[in-house]
Length: 369
Length: 221
Image 1: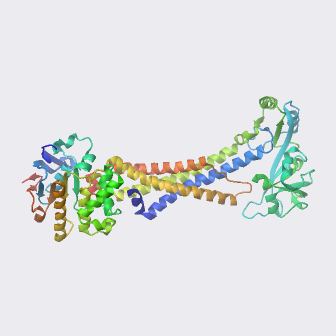
Image 2: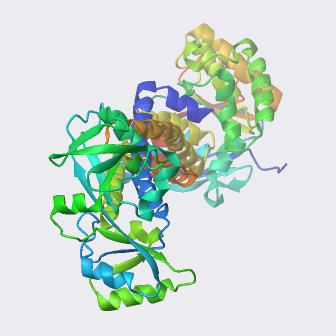
Image 3: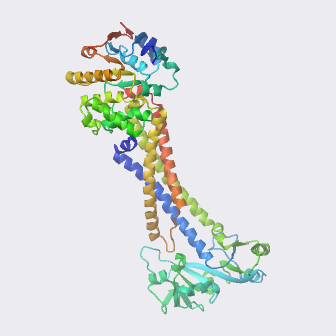
């Protein structure tokens, strides 16, 4: 009864405090949803290759700079545990004519060996066929729409012209918004000889992944053999993204918390006489403390719930303007954590004002003008 | 029920500002159960200080207050004493402006954890008894000065206290409304059998008191 009425007596001030919390929680939800979406997309990207292991360069914690040389690939191919090795490369390109509203005019170009099993999965959902040589390109559906091209068309890329032999559809945005050419095209463009960025390893049935790892890393200490599902742990930049997301969230959250603190301090100061009355009619310090804390918690709970909604809206808007291939990912845990942060903020922001109110002597408070 | 007086004070002293100001200077008095006890005196004579000490709103510098024979200095929880045993009526009524009459009367019951249905019922009856049964849903700011004071009388009675303390209860209203308020207080006292201690400047308010003492410079004259 008192909690709600106290908050509603200064509607604008209460609304601004709620807004502060809403923005803080929305920032947490939105940035984490995009960050987790990116991580999830990468996870799927590598899992769907069907390879059990990846070999990357330990010295380059970003796959864009990772190199596995030709002799290293040959050695790995020859290991008894290995059934097949597929080399993969990638780069970003700016093809002529690419215009996708609101997005960066870039195309993620994947290098694959023509005919290799790594590109066979695209056969299931595509118009046309997979690439067979270095003059051909297959394009993801989203990229094809952006480029306004289809099967049988041509695409200017890296200063040469490729024949579009297929348009594929993938559940992974990074692929859907990209294109696939022969590894040799990307290798030539990046001037990396016959190196690949990473090697996808298909192990023989019953082969020991641990033995494989030891064999690779003993022979080439600068290489790292990891399980496919461990890729996001290897990729250090994801950790930076996580840190960035947390720092932005933290700043937003601190601002929201200060809003609650300010509101509750002013509210307690304005109601000194009333608090004196409550104490005079027998309210204990604890009860006054709980009243003020409840007001802070209500502000933060409402702001938190609004923040969850605003966060989802914000994340979906964010990816509309972000480079293609990003997606969002939500979980009950994320919502729970964000709401928990909101409640904690309300509690912390109201704690000092509540303590201050509870310390008021009834007689002094009643005399307060 | 004990045979002790409702209120007994022994050598009650209250000093402020490090002892430089003496508000009460050794006041000893006994107030019988059910008595209408009136204290008159000029401003600054110590009347309100006396009331605050008796009502456990403040603690004396020295001396003792006994309520029903129990020393307040030995009470572990003065909040509970105020909630259960004392009903305050202030000059400025001190209602919570955003709450309705009914909710204002419920406030002391909240302090004792009375259940909602019981609070509502009792608050409604009390407002009816002070002639405000038709204004239960009105917020305090929409009430006249006299109505507000009557709500504060109902609030003072909410937990059925044995002691009602009124500090200039008619100080903020005209004389006619003042008479109505005092009628209301007396009716409530008759109904509850509570002891009534009133502090006032106004001789009309003191009319009908079982005993009236005058206070000057922190002592009863």
